[in-house]
Amino acid sequence: MSRTETRRTLLVANEVPNREALGELADASSVLVVAPALNSRLKHWFSDEDDARRRAEDRLARSLEHLASEGVDAQGWVGDPDPVQAIDDALHLSAVERIVVATQPDAGSNWLARDLFVRARRRFALPIRHLEVIAGPSG
Image 1 (cartoon, rainbow, N blue to C red):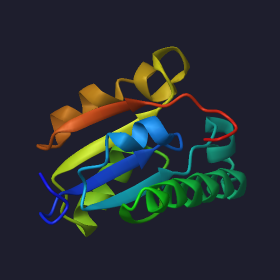
Image 2: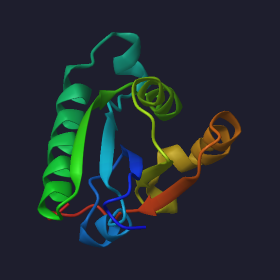
Image 3: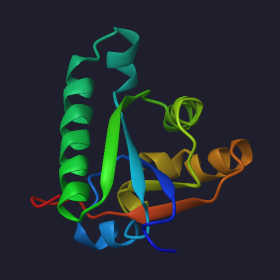
Image 4: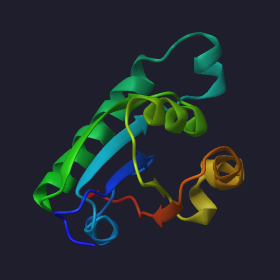
């Protein structure tokens, strides 16, 4: 599929996609990035979300910067801490053809431990792809 055809992709960014992961998005004509405001349960219970939002805003800005550097049209926002809810919210605002979720590798991903992909595939009738991203200084 060429970039002249519309291929909108929802990227749920638990990690900033590195150059290798961005290659997986090369066929997208546009990418909608949602960076969930990840927080601990204790901080969530006390409504202490400032740090979680700052980290999500940073992850979002770096994701958008990386996508722009590869020539991918992208926009996004900070989303709900629950990735399934963040996906649902995004799908109510924009039509996409696929969902891509960027996480740490299996051993380091809390989302994978909580069966994110099983829950998401049951709820959404779109292709869902997992990108493992090794977090590092270059992001």
